[in-house]
Length: 318
Image (tube, rainbow, N blue to C red):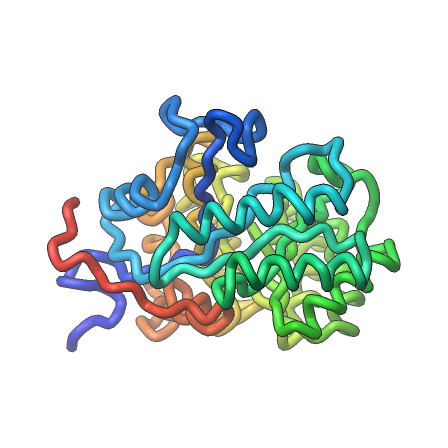
């Protein structure tokens, strides 16, 4: 039987639904906000693809996820939407090629009119490559730009409705205690919603019945998906998370679950290499049917984000 999961018998075929590239050098749009992998503040497509090859991955495509919403806490949503958010899309669109799409940052709290203006501008810059939006919502404990529970802000909810009307998805990054609120919000907004980083749990959450019941409730939404990623915040020994990850996959089903690299954050900020992350994913699901593993490593991401395959390098270098 010919495997549809591996290329040339050894290269894992992978659509990566969550990675970052950026340029923090010489006055670029994110100067001073992010880290410099190996001391070099320009982390572009070539470095990302090289890291994937070295990790034994045959990369079919991927989803760039915005970095802007962790930056510039002193800037208003209006200023961000007209500046940094668009500048990021412009740089990323130029840097990436076929097989990649973009989840951009938009500050939805600017309300209907402001979000409509952002959509008009981002379409001119990013075209159809911009498939969705992420605005980080982690509140209490909070990310730098999050000064309130945004899901309680009527203007933010109005902005969410606008991106739904334009057929965009929403990448949802929050804390576990916000899951119930998100369930009720997205129950009334039936748009594709992708939970990032398994809901940002701590090790304590993994033994909490509340985390699992709230996660199960959120998964009951037929338009809810989950990214299995950023596991290195829980432990450096990722295979030990196998029972928890298999439970998550069972709750959402493989049809609405996907592995993601979160590269280069996990490797350079959290201390687990890309190769070890990919290896752990393979170990965790090694006993699942291949059809399910294909969904987890590529099928779900292709479907949710509409990622078209890029051509595999005919001579990948390990």
